[in-house]
Image (cartoon, one colour):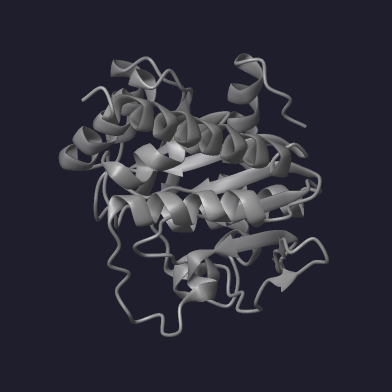
Length: 273
């Protein structure tokens, strides 16, 4: 054991050095970003990616400098949701330069899939390495907002993002149903256990089909800001552009969401331009 201990100690020191260097590189890569907002849900299928894309597009349409980072490694859908299929460029410093669509800089794991139908079957350490690589090697430049499409759930993938990416706060997506509220509550508990900020809860799919009000009740119960509701509309069938840029009623809903997110950021001392 006495012969192994020095080797183990050296290995731990080297691991700490690597972690410190990774953190330094990530902090350097993100230094030009004022606000980093995670869009997060307890389960897939509640419209998290749609909200992330439309939130980013609305911010950009209002004149902000915006990027969107798709770290839903298992099911990266941002490039299809924003209809952007141009590959990232590689700069002289070997960093990836994100393509831009509708005024939004886009980076996603989907850019590196040979076939988008293939399942990404990765273990926790592989996901961790991929997320670190994204954060270290993407050249975002100066941004007012980076919208981060989070992996759903409360297990390894979202935990890795939260521990690696210094987020300014999270928009939690729910729908009117009781089970969706339960899963959203779990997300909120995870965020707070990690001493991070819940910017608020937004309700998606509001209307006659799924009902109304579940997310507002949840927000009151967990003492979080309620960011409003987004109705289920036929206009979301048009996949040519973010619906907030194509439908005036949807644009109005997202303008209100953007304003409430900015208000929440300011209440937590953030620089919401």
